[in-house]
Length: 194
Ligand SMILES: Nc1nc2c(ncn2[C@@H]2O[C@H](COP(=O)(O)OP(=O)(O)O)[C@@H](O)[C@H]2O)c(=O)[nH]1
Ligand SMILES: Nc1ncnc2c1ncn2[C@@H]1O[C@H](COP(=O)(O)OP(=O)(O)O)[C@@H](O)[C@H]1O
Image: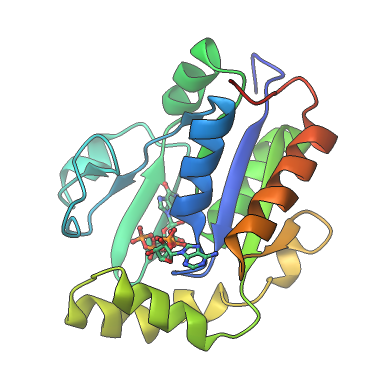
């Protein structure tokens, strides 16, 4: 399927575990291309169309040529193969943020070219605290914290055992050390830019 051997780092984990923060770190530190995905959920304060997501209507998302699509907390999300290819064309690696079902689909489609990172925290209460502090609207926070998908992605699902690299994102300095060690191990050609 892939016309390149460059990797895609797939960042997954529960809401609030730090997926977006980690993706930004890999983009800024290693010049990875952040693959922007599509969603029908409403933008959060500060989110920009075409930067954080392509924000879609339930009708417009159906017209997209998507590699995979999931429903999460009542909204549709999906990513395109063109997005991956565009990133690989100009960058040493891609980074994409997906739910755990999407992470499995990527690993099935791309094998070890998809480097799956599952983020977690030692205390589950940290997740709710971070989501609230992030400034999400109260009804969105409630819906997210009671969704089946949130519960599912709180701990490493069986289907990602043996596939995902687990990083505990309690302390940011430790997280960046773990990320740097992982990139050096699995993609030694992808180096930090000065
Ligand atoms: N499978 C899949 N999951 C996606 C896609 N885009 C975003 N997600 C996931 O959808 C879930 C909800 O994302 P979001 O509404 O931004 O909430 P967050 O987890 O609090 O950042 C997260 O697990 C994302 O990783 C996609 O294109 N495909
Ligand atoms: N190690 C950390 N320590 C403290 N706060 C963090 C850490 N990692 C991320 N955060 C903060 O937690 C909130 C949720 O992180 P975010 O990356 O948006 O999570 P996700 O994309 O998984 O929902 C953000 O406000 C982010 O700045």
